[in-house]
Image (cartoon, rainbow, N blue to C red):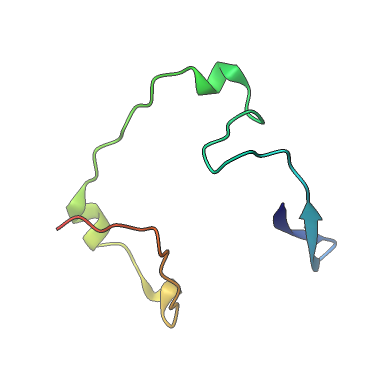
Length: 71
């Protein structure tokens, strides 16, 4: 079950979508063309990230509980 925010004609509402997802790793809803590709990781340019304007996120307090920050 997934909640999706829909914005139609400047009206926003939440809709409930039911899926047959069996687990968090279930990829059966994705085309096999994509799921069989080898993942390509993009290196992070830390200097670029440090210089991004973060003012859009001021006051944003949510932290993903599954996020693991590398030291």
